[in-house]
Image (cartoon, rainbow, N blue to C red; front, side, top):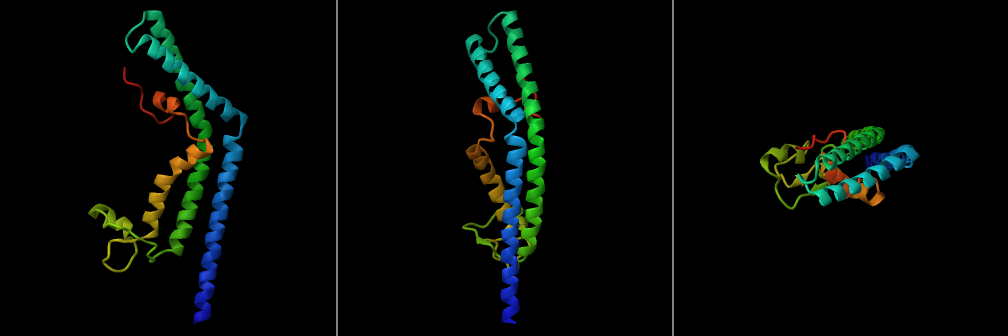
Length: 189
C-alpha cells in the first residue's frame, strides 16, 4: 500500500511539473506571437505618444476652455487615440484567449490534483458568501482551511497585474487615464 501511495504522489508531482511547463510555454508563445510583433510595438508607442500629447493639450486649454478650433483638435486627437487603443486591444485579444485557455486548463488539472485537500490555512474566516468557494470540497467545519480554487483565484487576481507591469505588457498610466480600450466605457461629456 505504501508503494502505491508514493507512486501516486510522484504522478501528481509530474502533473504539476507538466502544468508549469505548459503554462510557461503558453506565456512564451504569447510573448512571441503578440507582444514581440512590430504591429503591437508600434501601436503601443502610438497610444502612449497620443495619450501624452492629448494630456498636454487638455492641460494647456483646460476642460472647457479654448476656442472652437482647439476643441475640434482635441476631439480629433481623442478619436485617433480611441481608434489606436481599440486596435491595440484587438491585437492583445489573441494573447488574452491563449492565456485564458491555459489558465482554464491548468485550473482543471490542479483542481483534480488538489480536490479535497487543504492547501493553505487562512489567518481569518472568510465572510459567509465566500466560504463556499474558500472551503470547496473540503471536509470539516474549519472555514479557515483553504481550498485550491480559492487560493488560485486570489493569486491570479493579485499577481497578474504586477507581472504584466514587470514584463512591460501593461499600458502606461497616461494611456490608462485616457481609456479608449475595447471594453472601456465611453468618455463623459
